Structures are given as C-alpha cells and as structure tokens.
Image 1 (cartoon, rainbow, N blue to C red):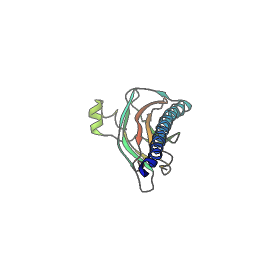
Image 2 (image 1 turned 180 degrees about the vertical axis):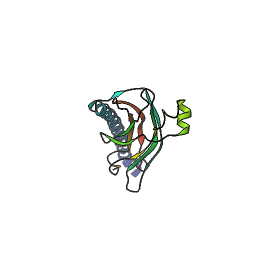
Image 3 (image 1 turned 90 degrees about the vertical axis):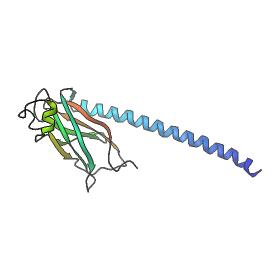
Length: 164
C-alpha cells in the first residue's frame, strides 16, 4: 500500500525532471544561437569580411597559471603573404591576442611557397584577463589580415578546465 502512495510522487518527479531537462536543452540551443549571432555581430561591427585566402591551424590551447587562455599555432595569408593578427571571440567580444611572427619549415613545405613568403606564420599569445568559466566555456579563433578580412581557425572550442 505504501508503494502505491509513492507512485504518483515518483511519476511527478520523472515528469518534472524531463521538463527541466528540456528546459536546459532549450537554453543550450538559445545560447548557441545567440553566441553565433554575437560572433557575426562582432565581426560585422569590426568591419571584417570573410575570406578563404587565410589558412592556419591551432597547435595548442591551454590556460596558464593565472587562468588566461594561451594559444599557439600558425596562420598565413595566401593572397597578401603578410602578417596576420589572431583574435579570440570570447564572452561577446573580439580580443587580439597575437600577430604572426617567425617561420616554420613544416608550414612552408605544406603551403608550397618560398621561405621568404612564409617567414612570419607562427603565433603565440594569450588573453588579457583570466578566463571565468562561469561566463563561458567555449571560444572562437579568427585570423585577420590588414584588409580586415578574416578566416575562422576554430569555432566553439572548449576552454581547458571549464568543462565541469
């Protein structure tokens, strides 16, 4: 008899839990849509346009001792052959973290360009402030040339140590 009295309560808990889970999923979908919209707004506000002439890769992502986001990698503008600036989109803002400087033989070989044209492809940099995992656990990395053209090097990347 006691078990029968607890069944309606158990059913209510299951229904409420399912509803709460749906609410969480709706929130995640809402956040992702607005984060993407925020990214598009940020690059439009900065006067940036998309290009396929920039290529690159992120080699490492970590947080340092004071919780700032640290990135290393390479980027190259196939059209201009000039320096490229690296930005992260985090918490609704674009933040410049590095400018390419220095050569890498593997990149020069992979791109198939003369060493003189690929003398400044390496980047290494960090965010200005510590990362607050309560505000964000993902970020996007873009490379921007002097013509204010950009390419996404990584989208919705997870911040190390912010996954719960």
